[in-house]
Length: 241
Ligand code: ZN
Image (cartoon, rainbow, N blue to C red; front, side, top):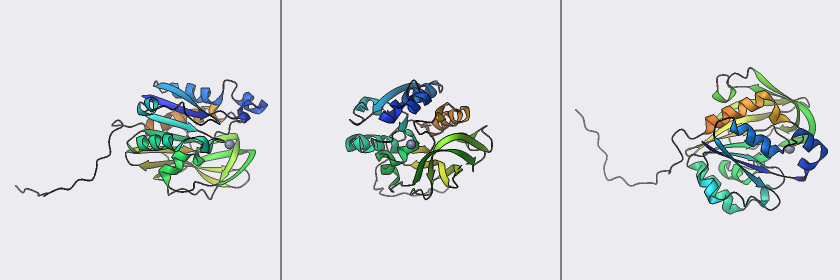
C-alpha cells in the first residue's frame, strides 16, 4: 500500500510549544506512524507556496492520502485539488486530520462549508465511541482521552456522515462529531478532529492505533479504478427457465 502524507509546515510548528510537541516535525511523526502499516509512505510538504510537491506521479500512485493543513488551505491550487478529488472518488482512501475540515479537497468532496466553532485553549477532549465494533475503534474501549486539544464544536456544517464513529466532548461543554466516515464514489474518507500542532496528540498510543485502523479501513479493497460512465442499454431481459 502506498500512503502519502500531505502535511503543512507553519510558523506555529517552529514555536517552543510546537517543537516540544514534535521535535522531529509533525509531518515526520505522521509519516513514521503510517509506516507502521507496513506500507510505503511519502511525505509531501505544504506551506505558503502551496503543495506543488504533490506531483501527478505521487497522486496517481497513492492508495491512501493523509491530509493535515491549518494555515495554508487557500494556497493549494485548484488543479491539485481537482486531481486529488478525482482520485479519491475513484477509490483512493483519505484521512483528513484536524483543521483539514477547512481544506479544499474536504470541502470539494463534501459540498458544504464544513465550518465549526473553535477555541484554542488546550482543553481535555474525551472522544466517545458511538459505533462499538467499528473497525476504526477496534480494541480502543468506550472512549479515547486527549489531555490537551484545540476545541472544535458543533454545529459542524457537514453532510450527515455515512458512519459516525466518535463524538468528542470538551471540558468547556461543547460536543463535536470528531470521528466520521464518508463514502463518496468508490472512495471512503475519515475525518478526525484531534491534532493541533502544539499538542503531542499523535503520540498518544490509542490515537496512533485509531489512525492505523482508519488507514486500513479507508484503503481501497479493490484498487483505485474508474467510475463507470452512463451507458444506454438497448434491451435487458430476464430469461426464465
Ligand atoms: Zn489547530
